[in-house]
Image (cartoon, rainbow, N blue to C red; front, top):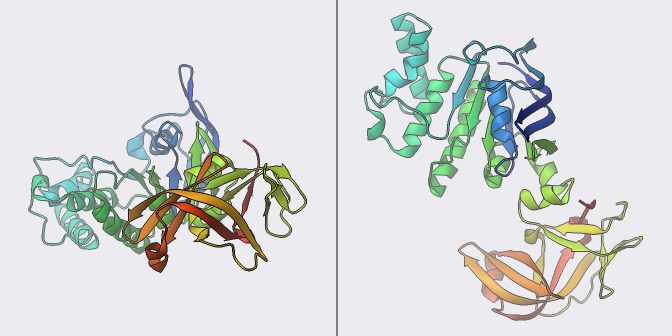
Length: 350
């Protein structure tokens, strides 16, 4: 296994800058998620680490070795693509053992490695099947087994669960995490799915327009976004803007919204919808709470949760409701929205 470090990576295509001076350290054995919208540079960065493209400037170091000019086949990398790229004319065992045969490993050693990989991904009895005889989740496991059977230093995953339906994605997230923990390999994966990134990652990095805008532990990045973009991209966030005061911000109608004590006031705060509560009447006391009057304009039921869309002074925001509170929701009408001041996230402009 190996630590990976990219420093000052820049990659341009004609007038477009795909990566702009990106520096990230991927610790040995960690599961790191690269997250960002389409065109943010996350797949370009993964391909630069793999060796499919060479950066215009900057360095890629794997296990202490500079590899930015080393071809892909010499980097000792395992990679899983979104479409799996399995060979249809080979059975499962042959697909998994392909990389070992290319390395001219002895047949008995290949057989053992393949059996171990099949057991690891829990497909021990499916070695003789062809890819078309497998489910999507099983094909994904075969692609993963093929990537790790060569015992690479680093595992790269490019939208590995993107082709699966939602229920199967959740199951495979659990399996992917289990396998990564069992073999302890440094894993870097690209996803546009925020929930997937939060679930799988030890750390996440958010990319935008080829730049790294924030990184850290999922809980820290979610609870303490560094920008309006990060707050809105990683989960939902309601944004409120007002005049700066010593305690928080004052909205245009004079309502004061407070931050937690000790936080430097800025003109914008974000609030996650799940931290807000809806009441018909104003709470008897608002000590330590922020309270807004608003009107419910729509409620979207989604089983265990419901999303309320509310309007206030021409602006809309969301509240996520769950559990027993769903049954008491009004369809429409004036309400009070309350949340702890500690859940107000101060954000800089921009």
